[in-house]
Amino acid sequence: MTEFVTIRNLEGSEADLCRAAEILRAGGLVVFPTETVYGLGGDARNESSAKKIYAAKGRPSDNPLIIHVAKPEDAEPYAVTCDLYYRLAKAFLPGPLTMILPKKDPIPLATTGGLDSVAVRCPSHPVAHRLLELCGFPVAAPSANRSGSPSPTCAAHAKADLDGRVDMILDGGDCEIGLESTIVKIDGDTLTLLRPGAITPDALSLVCKEVNIADSVLGQLKEGERVLSPGMKYRHYAPASPVILLDGAPDAVLRFLQSEQKKKPCAILCYDEELPVLKNERLFPVGARDDLAAQAKILFHALRDADAVGAEIIYAHLPPKEGLGLALYNRMIRAAAHTVRTIE
Ligand code: AMP
Ligand code: MG
Image (tube, rainbow, N blue to C red; front, top):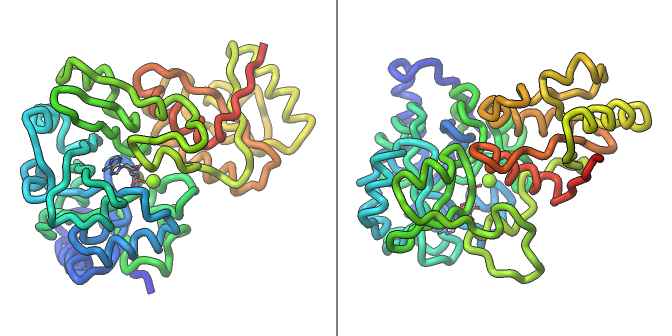
């Protein structure tokens, strides 16, 4: 049985959050809101909690979990920190940045998918922050979706995927950012971007001179290729209907969509500006063309909705690779299994 709790304001919810912390301490699973997406939490020190998380998600157990703490210094007993960690923490935490560091013993290999490193994050969402304070131990939390479906950006998505598989779901409303955290690996004075998110490479460059971008962020991995971030090798964010990304001048893409929607039952993730021109029952607006933050917030919701209408194909625009666009691009090429169609 999954208990469903709505958090309207922090002050009135202290008793519920205390209970959630107790469930986690006792080895149970709690879904909680963060500023990026909803997380599926378990005690990061507890091997059996980690195993339960993998089972609830149906996630391969070599795909490591991110550990969440209330404050950057709370990671000390669990990860080998360094100067760059604290510089980045000062600039971006609490917030949507995850840092990979060498792990310390209290974090079992079951939590890190067998790796000797650990991913650390301090979410800024007030509910997540208070829950972590009440726990006083690190909470391992991947996105609260079944493996392969888009990350949940509201409690209803988490419920659709995990009802009956977790002890409690805390509903804290819609996630502000809507895409998972930026992940960087720290090596001395160098950063490698493993997953793009709301903290962009340009923002990271203000704190660290050398920011490399892992090949897996933009490209398709070759069979058997070694990856720095195991999650990148799985077909993530994938709806059941095939997704095709369209690349081309705005007018040409719009003309293509107008003609295509007459030929077959397709769903379209369109820009707000295109709504009046396309006129189709299967349109899912993703925000204005130039409003990347709005697109980030809506994207996973739109993908779930588009998938629910059972269309033969889902068409979407290929996002730009600049700024926040890089995070959208990275998610969309995965949702589309790298299927991009160029429109002349
Ligand atoms: P999710 O939990 O769904 O947000 O995904 C977590 C992501 O963090 C996955 O892509 C993992 O591969 C990545 N990750 C977590 N821990 C590590 C680690 N120690 N080294 C590299 N990547 C990691
Ligand atoms: Mg995930």
